[in-house]
Image 1 (cartoon, helix red, strand yellow):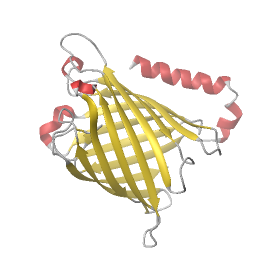
Image 2: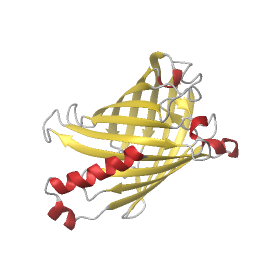
Image 3: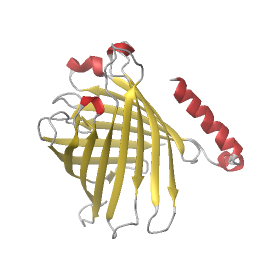
Image 4: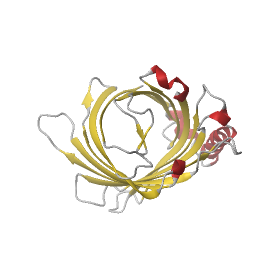
Length: 256
């Protein structure tokens, strides 16, 4: 928690030091509330709640359009049998762009998250820090195709023999295609992903899963968006997930 507080203090000092003051006075803190339902939750390919569904509630604070922000997410299973696995995620982030307008433009999203299982003592839960490095290349391929790379590095929030969660990486390679469908108000996003496990949680170092999916969005109002999706994960490494999984998601986002 101290690291998160230090990060937020650094954000405030940085925004002040680089002359954002006048600009920030004209902007407001953006607030987005998001409610997600997942028929099954797969965390980097691994089932978080077995075959149970999951509900996420997220508050996202955009700090004056500076690129800095913080998300707080509550995650829980739809089954009461997983009450001890309910958790809060606290995730400061920074989003930005490099080489804007060029073919090799990079949109980046870098964050660090503290995953807190509040119903359990820290030494009894897989309480971890997780760094996420996301890079999107919007202009690299022909129109409609968007490649993306996401790296996760997760490690225990505390050490000792009683805490045996194994640190490691997961590397995800994604390619989306926006298919224009006249009957839909927004493109049908056809997504594909393949991931490589770098030993996180004791999993073998190998290609772990591939996922195919489709989703689209509907505007329910000026500030409300509904996004349903369906996905199929082909599991390739039993130490991550020992079965293929078909699951659906529904996301409701309200932006203040």
